[in-house]
Length: 234
Image (cartoon, rainbow, N blue to C red):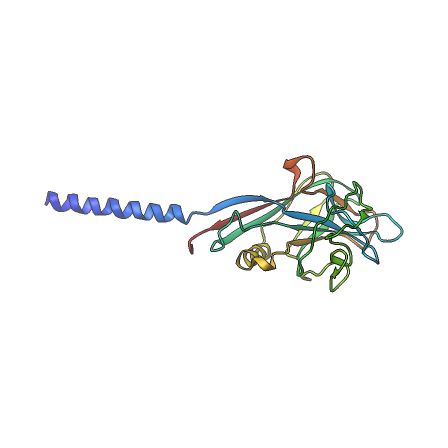
C-alpha cells in the first residue's frame, strides 16, 4: 500500500512539473521596441520637402498660409524581438509630445498601405528641409521616383486608435483590437509592415503637435512600441 502511494505521489509530482513547464513556456511576454524609422509628411504640391533625419515628428496643421498640413509616419522592426509564430495580445504606442498648440486634439493612428523611406533631410522646425534621396514626402514614398497613390500617404481609412493630445508629456495609443490586428499582420507578413500614419486636426490652423522622433538626443523620449504576446503555437 505504501509503495503504491509513493508511486502515485511520484507520478503526480512529475505531472505537476510538466504542467508548470508548459505554463512557463506559454506565459505572456512583453517587449518594448524603439521605432526603426519615422518622418513627417510636409504638405507640398511638388513633394520637395521632408524631415527624415529630424529630431521631431509633426502632426496636425501649422499656421502657415499654405502647405500647412503635417502627418507623422512611424514604423517598428518586429522580426528581431518577437517570434513569427507568436500570438499578439496587447499593443501600445508611446510618443513624447514636446510641445503643441490648439489645446487638446484627437490624433488618429492609421495603418499605412505602402512602403516609404527615411532620408537625410533635417530641419529642427516644422517647415521641413529639401528632400534627399529616399525620403518620404507629401507626394513620394521614396524621393524622387516613387510616389503615393494619394498625396499625403496611402493608409487605411479606419483608425486603429485615437488619443487626445494636449501639452507636453507621454501619450499612449492603445491597446485596441485594431492595433493588435495590425501588429499580428506585420508579424505574419513582414512585407506588409509599413507602420502607422499619425493624423491630426487638419481642419483648423495652429493645431500641430510636435513629438520626439527616434533621432532625438534623449533616448527615453524616442517612439516606443510595447507588445505583449505568447508563444503557445511555437
